[in-house]
Length: 220
Image 1 (cartoon, rainbow, N blue to C red):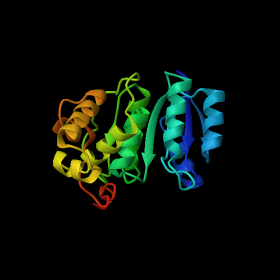
Image 2 (spheres, rainbow, N blue to C red):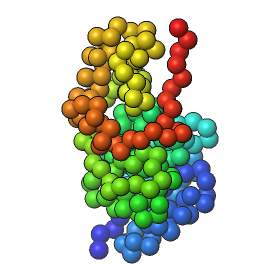
Image 3 (cartoon, rainbow, N blue to C red):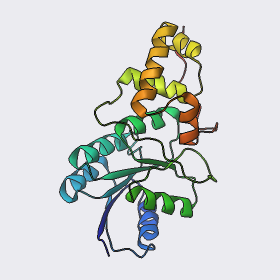
């Protein structure tokens, strides 16, 4: 039986305990480490080079999970990262995509869904379930190429696309020309491996919800 190393990152001990219990219940041979802070997670990523990192996005009020995801991917290309978070806002999804996360699951998902997402992510498959308390079968968006990270502006545009804002609305909010926005959207979709907005929404299982309100509009 293969020996699997997993790092669970969450500032809440109860969440870490629940995930440890869920992983151990699979019956596989596991080495499970825990971290409650970003600094602790980075140190353990460097020391143990886990095959799977399960991390919350928000630690001590900041999105430290994004840095953990980037670091884990940079430290070992064989490390898979599953973001398990209470934050399913469009900006959170955009940041996770740009950081190279393999999977993204909202904490409202049932235990069996989380367990299946862990299994699939560890097997090299991708699972994205955003803000769905009861979810359909998991989906697999294409992995973004490592050599093509999004710029901060592209990530901002992606967050607005995930809010289902039109190109005209994005142009108005960011004070950009419509053609400029269209170019940004095309570039973002190409970098993520999607052919259209519809393909993006379908693959990420995006649905409207209280956490999907998106970034505030800038005053005109």
